[in-house]
Image 1 (tube, rainbow, N blue to C red):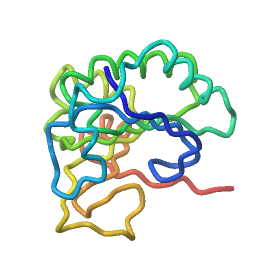
Image 2: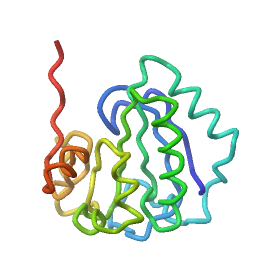
Image 3: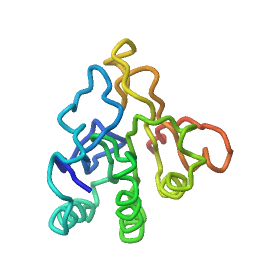
Image 4: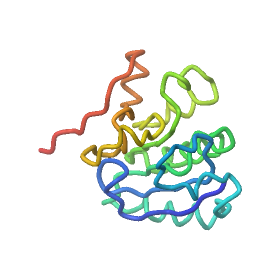
Amino acid sequence: MRYHNITKDDMLNGDGLRAVLWLAGCEHHCKGCQNPITWDPKGGIEFDEAAKAELFELLEKDHISGITFSGGDPLAPYNAPEVRKLIEEIKEKYPGKTVWIYTGYKYEEIIHQDKYKSLLKLCDVLVDGEFRIEEKDLRLQFRGSRNQRIIDVQKSIVANKIILWKRKEML
């Protein structure tokens, strides 16, 4: 698995302050993509033990809500197996942290495929769908175009239908 960047204290790619892992490789090549540099699966650098240590150091911090996987596409066939392994490790080590994944695939396309279903069962929120320049809307939170959905994966799996994510009310 290759990546381009690890972002610290990010507020734009998921709820709360987050660590973001920007993966290399995307098959969608959306017109108007904000990260076309991440399309090449051979781009970026190898995700090694030093990168994992950097990521885990961020996740140790109490003020970090969780991790977001973006890119590129974390669910590209060559990324998904390693992403799943990494999420398993994160969930074991940091059970209170949430996992968000951005993908160009639609939830309905992947939920019934074994290689994705096991990964999605570990995920809290999935932002799905290709970015569409003609549906771009800068007022949207956590997504770039109106066709993209923010899905509460755990509730959706239990209900066997798509349940959109809603921000929890602050006390």
